Length: 199
Image 1: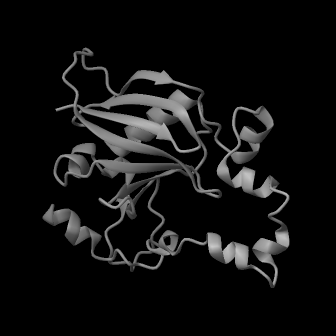
Image 2: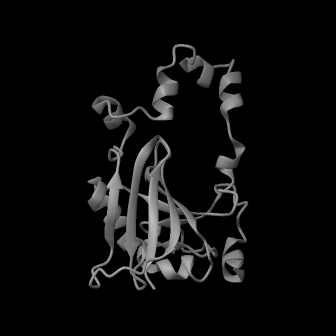
């Protein structure tokens, strides 16, 4: 079975990309194809995140194992995590690929089902791309003028100052704060491994 995915970019609804991966490929193959296709810096530390049915991040699939030896929680690493293990076995269909970790900029990834076309066994491959390629950093995107991310737009808004976000009167920052962003870091998904196994 081969897997077909659609990649989209929240900051630019015009961008769309289709990628097909083979049944024996892992998330490192997926990562390498994205980096090659979008011409991203190969030295950057990127991650996939598994999303639950509500769109919340429940598990990270990291480029390398950065855990401590005494951690009991299972760590997902790209080169050891097969596409079929997550998609077919557990029926997860939605992911995020974070390519700018400092600004939390990412691609949305949706599993569209089995790919039944013939590509002579050369996987992964790109089905096609629409729109402009995302830039890998906010700074690069801002300079190029291709788009400005939501965070760049916020930073350039005259009504939203540094003090609003970091000063004593930070009501604006608090009103924009989304506590769900901290769910993964706070360990609220500590049972995700059991959840994955039951799917």
